[in-house]
Length: 387
Image (cartoon, rainbow, N blue to C red):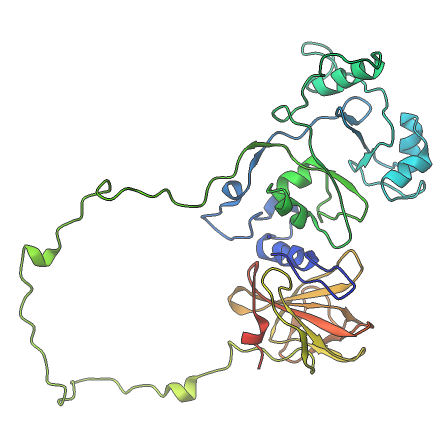
């Protein structure tokens, strides 16, 4: 999706990119309409940019995904951590600790929790039986492993996804689904499907995700060199077979007839390519494509934050540290991102003018505004746009 800025002492990272990604490809109808590699129209390379992955694993009748190294449980509608623990016969306090939750916390339907101890998996019916789902060979094999004596023996049946057990990833502060997907070179769409993420693709600190199992490596973007002389034959230039006609030129001293008056470009030149400073102050942290995809501008807490250019408020969100982020869309697919804004005076969908106040700088030590300029999903150096 791009990996972004970090507040001093606060890991903002790619919450900003998540916002930009949603803006660049989402039409407001949920995940189904999101262009996952952040491009519009024909020519999207989303499927080619990441490794191909296996089909989403199917839980057993108890909602448990079983692998030799761990198990995950899928929450049902209305579940809490405690009710899920009671249904599976595990300690609710241990289940809560394993997932950075409390026993009373409600769960989203389909949310996956890491089990602190193994439970007996419920085998699914074989093909031709009364069940409707596919057989989870891994769950059956793992159940047999639990019941077997603890002595060396043959390996259990391979899990789905090309014989590999999915890698577990524990979410840390500042991470998003897009960051994690890029870290493992899988698509964000596959990551969301395998972990039953909601339409906002939200993840929380301490959550355990399983990484989709790759079935094929990503294609090599480097072109294959072709030895000289093995390509297509060079066409014969037209001048080699037929001479060019004689040109009737006019002396430079003579003014061409019907020549329109040259426009005064000085009068017509605008500063549309430049942006206004969102807050007055000096830049205390510069742009770095890999480490800080924007600039940090020193400003006292409470300083008005103003729109750098006229546009539309396209998103208002927060990162995992609850730092508020505002994204404004401008002409020519240009986006400006303002992180660390409190007391918002705008809402999503509002039209704003250049220099219009959108909020104030939040409290901090030191207090500052993080500001980014993006062309679609790609970050640009804001200093080349600021006046």
